[in-house]
Image 1 (cartoon, rainbow, N blue to C red):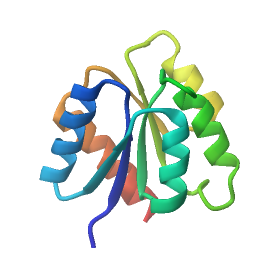
Image 2: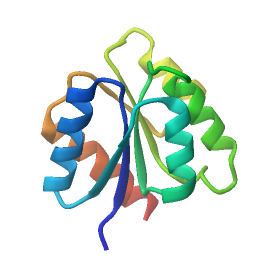
Image 3: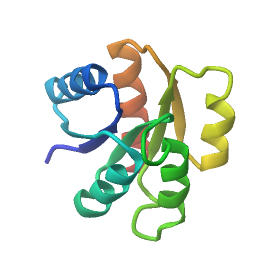
Image 4: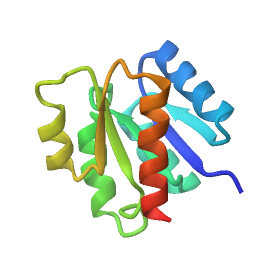
Length: 123
């Protein structure tokens, strides 16, 4: 059974590209464009991993991560926070309870390595 990955990013081209990369690598990937949509999809689809942009409309990714890490049904799902804001990403990832972080722009190899590491750790 394919592992499910929720990708949350408000940059349409990056979201589409990331979903394609993950699908071609054998994952079932689906997307959201804001923090609230992330929470809704996480609850109904129960992904194996969430790639979550930090700066989003409606609700920022680090806020959504905090909510999910407090939710009994969702707290086990690994969350990788992604952002181009390199000065604050590490600290905000730690504060939100995210399991890792990835700086934008990222290479496919870097993305897939991070995904595989966190999916294997949660298995």
